[in-house]
Length: 271
Image 1 (cartoon, rainbow, N blue to C red):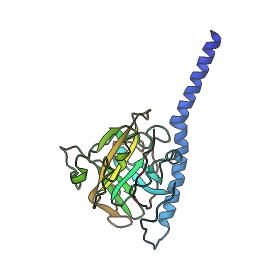
Image 2 (image 1 turned 30 degrees about the vertical axis):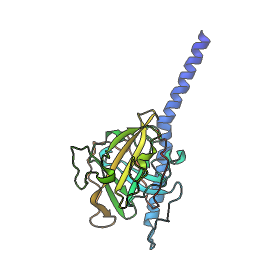
Image 3 (image 1 turned 45 degrees about the vertical axis):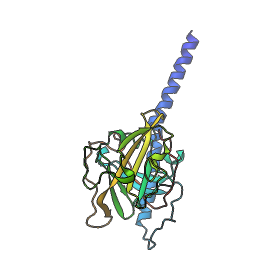
Image 4 (image 1 turned 90 degrees about the vertical axis):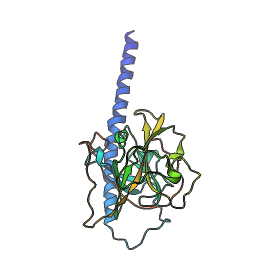
């Protein structure tokens, strides 16, 4: 019996060590990767460019695409978003779904991130309420999106979803097979509107510590919210946070921005 007890104790210690690594050890590595990505992004933005990016200038896998800020999750909550949603990208922070619109483009900009481990960037995603701001920073603009509210609430600068977007809500929980949530018209991948709305979709695993479902947040670009960086009008978004940082609990990081073309994409499996 003593031998069995010793084996069980050993297994328990191994499980605790593994859990600690997943929750905290991966966060340390993610922090370092974010710092590196942030420096690369700043260097790129500091480099003058006389070339106007086109839809053919798609970012390569792993390249920084934008910096995401969610003031409600804390004044320091900031991550660099990289291109792709493979595990190697998501292990370092948020990833942009390849094939979806780039920040600033018409269409649906879709971003995924982990909710547990790897710094847990989207741990606080479930606390976002209707009309909360989500900001994407690119080389020359701050793009302020607002989480779509329920039918009884109105957001300043955001029209109620209509036409092909009618019925779209700010928050939904779906099975992992629902890849249509990142379509240009979420939930209706067969539609290609002549004048696509400017949307932002954030996805992560649900519930915490499980990949059984996906938590999906939809937001719309606020009218007049595209502010050019480097001008007197440029200001950080209003901080309506609750004193939390990045994941909603921990201190955060920052990242980069670029461009690319629209299309489909496979939802990731951030956990």
